[in-house]
Length: 116
Image (tube, rainbow, N blue to C red; front, side, top):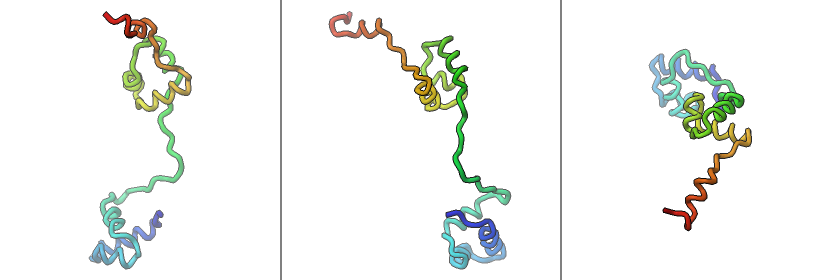
């Protein structure tokens, strides 16, 4: 549960005026840990607004061009080049229905009867 900004200011004022943290927590009915968190925050701290957070959108056209130009790149290398997370690259590739490369020549050489 989020506490009101007014309550936070009253607790901080009480402690600043010489009251103990424990007494402030009891008097204002908040957890002692909350008092310590509020005291540890900078004075200009602003609470995050509620709601969904949107991540960095991956330009799928740019990703497709990158795959076209360098098809042997690993997902971590694509992520590094594009400045996004590996998980983001993985999700973008799934959305684009791009599957990993399946090299038939490599698969054939790994068959039990074809080993050197």
